[in-house]
Image (spheres, one colour):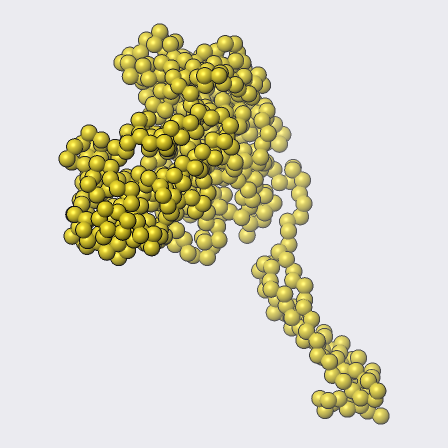
Length: 627
């Protein structure tokens, strides 16, 4: 006897089972046939299964939806170190000539990157934690008066030169001698001297005698010996400062304080960098960092097997491509030949899918801001300064001018500096209601009662566009009129001259400027830019309690206590009751493209890239390049 289902079809029990098998097989074949063959992870597939069952003589049809487990992209099979080979990191520079790598003379970013990896510093800046860590100096202490710093050096970091190639393709190194305190003394004296010229030597003027040697034409040996840096022995170094300064520790991590071997410079002279690595035993090229160079043009760096400090990354060989005319690092990245490339100067579509998924924006340490003249009859009132600062929509400003290439700032110290505050945690920023309330509380009460004032900007088209955007915001949010705000464009040199404290009647009411880090520490902003006496004080701001706090913060050695005072200062200067000596606007971003196989790294927002912190998955890299 047959059975009639609710679908109107007749089956026997055996036929029902056969039917189910056929249905499932057919559906599975359809699903398999329709699967994406690219190997990417898919959304879970679904199949619909119809089953016919007999319950008390009645046929019941049950329909079920079954999720198929997605099949992930096959992972590369485990390979031995011999099969994969050395872990390589491939980078490129767009330049016609090789970068300068003299620590006391280099100014280019790619040169500073090489110095960071070829020469050890007294200390090292940790780009993940924004803290100073031991390097050549394993410990240090400071005298009670805060002026004498004593560093105790390791005895297991060496000047090295390339040795013999090994079976695994890597070279060993020959150690020449340990890096000593005298090498540091030589480098500091060289930086303080004005021959050869060290661009940022003025940051070292806090070392006793450095400024005198730097500003004295043809400084003598005696002038150099009077600089406050002394090697007490091979592993003990003493600095004497002109005043207490916690930020001095940050200075010891910078590229232009890196030691050099005196005998090497004496042999080759200050133009030693034009003589690249060579095999001549009498004038070898010596390095002391986590990597050493191979070849005459520094196109390959290899890990230093004698480097004693822990490595966060796994990079063994760095291949550097100098993209000259007719070539592009971006094209090489697109062809998977470069692991990482900076694209700030390239005209590419950041919204394009492959670009957008591999794009990383690295904040730079240059804050663009509006300065207020405290001698102005308008901006001498804090309520007016707060009103005009809070009426600026930073988000609209950066999106209009730069798209994703900038970040709005509502406080001063940028990310990547010691004791910086995360974005948005302090400061008023854009707040139109607050802006109108503050203007109403001022002596003017309304923007309509403010006399015309001068807004001085540089001669670039971008500066004019920015000024016009800000003027429109002041008109819309504060009720000002266009005629009240006189935008005046001048050459940058005139802008600097007219905003000096002693410029007299030429001083504008408000102006645009930017401040870049000379060293990645909060004091470079609070002390060197804003302090009423320790900076240029272009605003001619009178001294207040905030200036006492700035000095107090830079006299503290405890990092957490110091950071707490700088946070307090950011609030007292840029919070809702802040002095508002200037209006922070934005920082620019440095865009870079990073391949998927670069699994971990800490980008340098200041100073050189630390390639020994990079993690590369060579199995994925080889697989991707083979496609």
